[in-house]
Length: 224
Image (cartoon, rainbow, N blue to C red; front, side, top):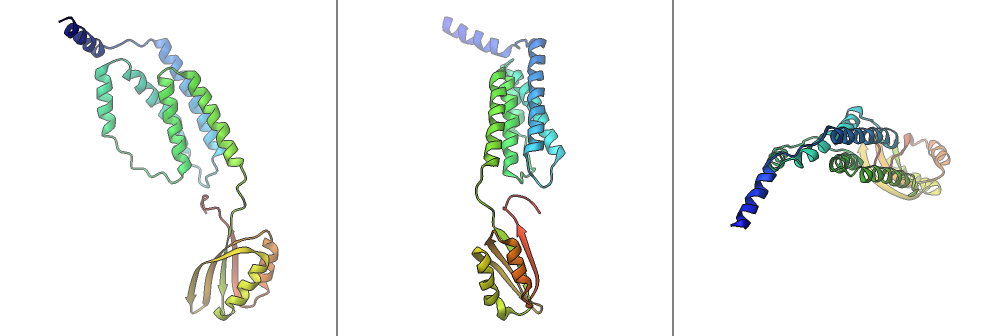
């Protein structure tokens, strides 16, 4: 009987709201604001996206406020906890994330909100600093020069082998990506690695059969 009474008392205590002081709330929101501003500036100045989205960056800064207050509310009552879980379960986000690194910043925002909401401010601050340092180090780490895309318009397709032989003198790992035949001749896209860009383009301009030549540096990440 005493055991049943203890269980009922525990459930009753869980259903009752636990007061959260104003001081604790202001402290938590202040820490969240500082960390949100910090992430805002890190994303603005570390991210190298071709098209910077200020709206996305503002969203990153606002997410921790909602997450942290939700976490704080979950600590007050069992009813609030169950209701919040049910409400979040029906939310669907359909916005596509184009850059994989943006997903990291989203997790960073959620992480800041959760950790700050539980009152572990030191963990939130130190983890944000370590993430920033690690992010910068990985971005500065040299991983070799990205290949070029060489786009050619050849008026006489029969000269293809001769032109590729000249390209091999100034480049390595020459790989033909596409050939497109038309009445105007042959359009080719080649992937090459070279440190003699100027010499290569000068050699190609000496071919009368080449109507146009473009050398494009592209690492597969940045948008044109």
